[in-house]
Image (cartoon, rainbow, N blue to C red; front, side, top):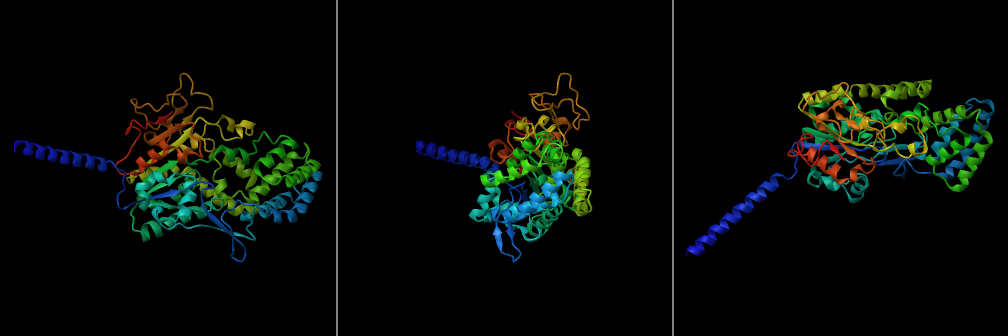
Length: 479
């Protein structure tokens, strides 16, 4: 009898213990409040768009496709204008010919004969079909958000289009679908890469949205663009220093069949020389600006470059509308700190995840840029941009002996925001207590690295990380 009582008591204790253990475990599972939705804003090339011809027939599911059959008719005009421009050392229709050729080669950029519409994903991730789910999973491992798919939305936009249209569309998406139709009252914004540019314009155009935002998590976001675009638009190019280098650079960007490459190379060799190189390069850049350099791409020009780039490429009469739109974006960029501060005053929180200590893509390996080769980055977005203003040592260097932080946001002497490798001073970024840095993390791979995705998930959930001190597994500097 005593043995039976002992066994019964033992079983009761085991059941209670297992219940307590399960409850404690379940309590640690990531979750969102029922009234909160996550809205992800993808970056460049991460969006799904469709191209339609004049009759409304869908011809492609991407803007970046080649129509080599349409290229041949535009080549004679391109060759003629190139010849005239080279002989006179003036832009004799070359910019228009380049724009026309690019438009014919890449029909998604031909505004006269084609229209582009982003696919609308007006449902949470849990309701995506397999193809749509796979498309975005190619860039970001969505399995990291498995527990939150029912409350996670993807805002899709034309990432080679109008940045104003993208920002307006984001507001419509949140107001009409996430809040108006599905009934959420709070938003967690997750801008990725170029999505940071769209988000900062949205915040400036729609200040009433600030009270809706519970959190905003900038994930390798181009909040102040990238020097890659800044150097290009201000013509600080070193590789385009000779006719031979021009041809090499051109075919780094444009992939065409070998016969076409040889033909274009032959034509360039006939007409391009050292005397007219600057004029011809300028004309080509104007043509590219007219065709594929949209206001979203202009949004990747950092503020420090914009005045010079604007004077170089946005002062023609035909650029009035584009210039006004980019000016408005740059105004929003200057207002970003005040807008984020307003979100915080209304109860929201701001987080940033940045990569550092890598050169800006392959361009620096071939001495493409004069200044960009010094910039610490994640290969695409400079660390100063994605971190919202951290002080960053030049690539391969440290902050130096005797370094003293200038204008730190965090002035608490007990807080150390200097990275162990002495490359980053996070005290100067907008939100030092909620900014993380990942050394040697590539931009394109950020969405597939376990540490960065797990950190993002823990930041967005209610019972997760609130600052850089919350979890010893995620210190401010992930080396």
